[in-house]
Image (cartoon, rainbow, N blue to C red):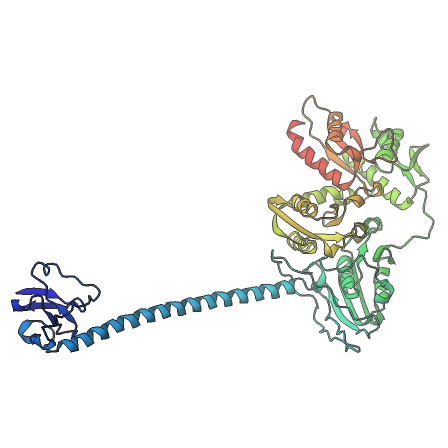
Length: 581
């Protein structure tokens, strides 16, 4: 008796008749032909692919195969198929395996195609969402509907709700700035109807100064300001926000002369209000500025906003310094006159009058000179613990110091690929809650419009100062920097404009001296650390530099007149050298 296993279905078969050894028989379960092996071959059964049955000798016919019932005992149902039936069953089984393999291959290809389509669809959908979001981000905040460039466009209805959207944090992905679509010069211009409120503009503009569109090409400002305004409500919003809105509405770049505005006792966030109906843009702008005693003028393809000239007679620029003479031995009127001339107004002549009085002879700008000298004397009074003669606060007396505290706050910002500079400035406004003014006059001089400048920044765990330095340094074809206006306001300008003599500031730097060190030593090291072109040279005081240092030993301070970029270098240098002083 021989026990074998079917190589196709694995059924256990028992061969009782030894005469069938070497013969081809049919499996009673799957009807497949198989050869009965010799006892040595039947010891280890195998289950594998169907082997081709050996050829039947010619002297043996197919009908010599004995009945299965006489040869096998199996648990499978008994049957007596002939060899031809077994061959057909084998062929059917072989075809079934081929079909299974083919179907598996087709299913695999189908699943791969479905997966590929899903990935492609997700990518297209995600890209479309990002593109839509970026377009929404670069749309001017508060801009009215773009007028239809048709020959006779209809007025665009604007609801009574605030027109400016809520701020959205910009994505770091690059976004293209959409230039405002203006109607042809000879086309009918739709009237503007807008309600501008504090909630819709003040501090909530998504793009800040980012989308003031202009170019170095000549702009017909007079024609732009003829834009008819059907209705405009301005409800107690900051001056800078109104200027940005008005610049987008008319398509004309506008620069706020912040230095002159500060001398007039105003700031970038001074509030403005008004209601206007059926007027032109020029009329609206004039009336809004009149309320703050300001005016606008055209200059170099843009509008410059400055204080109105005071036609009244300026009082004599006289300063009473008797309190210094009475309580300080080293600050006599002659000494004060020398310090004022070096630090405050090097181009003017300070004269000492009787009764401890000082006067400025032939002042170029009497009002500005009076304010700067008065502020300098008040700073000295604070340093020497003398009573102030004004009610100016510390922030008014030394705004750069408070602004320095703001720009040294921790900040991380990364734009690895170049994006519009306007986008980075908008992001900084949103994160720092500061106001960033744009000096378009400086950009015009560099022949690089603000909206065309590209920048990148990589700053991890740095400060706002380091972020701005990296960002502005990355702008090609222009040398840019920033100025501290006050604790809430910065200005982006060119390095050339920032270093002009009339933009230099007089700042006080406190030094904590170690034993054996003097203020003169620190002053000498500062002159070598900061670029030499920034200082007055004895051989050319009127043409080279303009910065000067005066030591005030009793208070342990340095009184320095320098440009804003140089003042920042000095502060960083003193902070780094403080343990050695």
